[in-house]
Amino acid sequence: MTHPIPASTAAKLPLMEAFYTIQGEGAFTGHAAYFIRLGGCDVGCVWCDVKESWDFDAHPYVAADAIADEAARHPARIAVITGGEPALHDLTELTAQLKARNFQVHIETSGSSPLHGHFDWITLSPKKFKFPIAEAYSAAHELKIIVFNKSDLKWAEQEATKVRPHCKLLLQPEWGKREQMMPLITQYVMANPQWHISLQVHKYLDIP
Ligand code: SF4
Image (cartoon, helix red, strand yellow):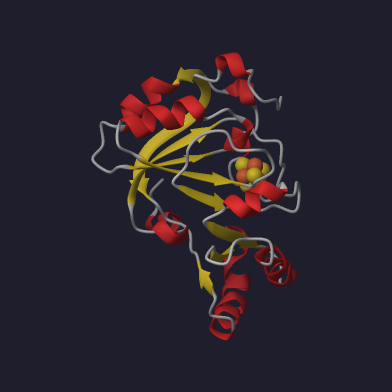
């Protein structure tokens, strides 16, 4: 079942999992961070590696302050809100609770729904299965394109025309296609150095 939670219950969010690890993707690769994975997604990527996150109702609703308290038990002060599609939820309360505990708050979103909350770093990873809304492009600090086919490199350039000038541009192979796509991505980044490579380093390290 995929539906946004009512605003009146936004202080409680469907929590699929939360864990302390190393950010493996994007500009903050290598940084220790606390990940908060919320349930619910209406995007439906065929290659999604967290399909168990899609159903809102499969996950317990947890109070925002309890999520933040648990995050604060760890020493790093980067919190990454991910999903699922976390923008389906009103994150105002959760981000306020994290900020109150001195967290730098990051979010990883497809940009397909409006954001509600206060974010220090917005990773926009657009998906062809449900396109971002216009405001997602102007809010993004990094644009992360998942490369599943060679044609995704052309699509990446189209998407890059929509973000702000200083938005970081990242190409990341879809994990199951990495052996085919990495040679193409490597050549492409060498020829177009405004793009950087993002690897799912946590998967190479076999950590969450
Ligand atoms: Fe999976 Fe993310 Fe796509 Fe949703 S947006 S289907 S969680 S990869």
